[in-house]
Length: 149
Image (cartoon, rainbow, N blue to C red; front, side, top):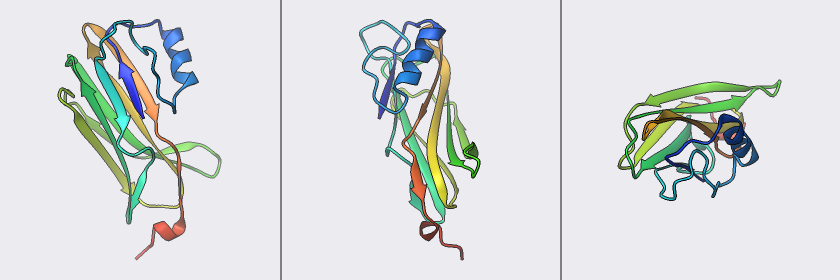
C-alpha cells in the first residue's frame, strides 16, 4: 500500500473526493499535486496489524525525495468496539523528516476484536501544507492470539 504526496496542492474538496474514493487502494493519480516527480510516499510495512502476543503491532513508513520543511507522522492502532465505533488504543508521534525513509511503529496490548492502523501525516512541502490520512486493511484478532497470563 503506497500513497504519493506531490508538490502542488489540489483544492480541499477534490482531495477529499480522491481520498474517499480510494483510501484502501493505491492511488496512481496525484493526491496533492500536479508535478510529475514524486516527492513523498507513505505506506504500511504490512497491509494490516500484526500480532506478536501480548501485543498488536502497527508499522508504516514514509520516504521523501524532496525533504519537507515540516513532517509529523501520527501512527495509531484502532480497535472497533461493540457499537461499531473505532477506538484509538495507542498512538505514536514522530517529527523526523523522512528523507531518507523513516519507519514508524506503534503497539498496544492485545485484545480480541477488529483492528486497523491509521497513519496521519501533516507538514509542509515546498511551501504547500499537507494533511493526509490513510488506513490499513482491517484484521480480526481472536482470543486465542491474545493469551492472558
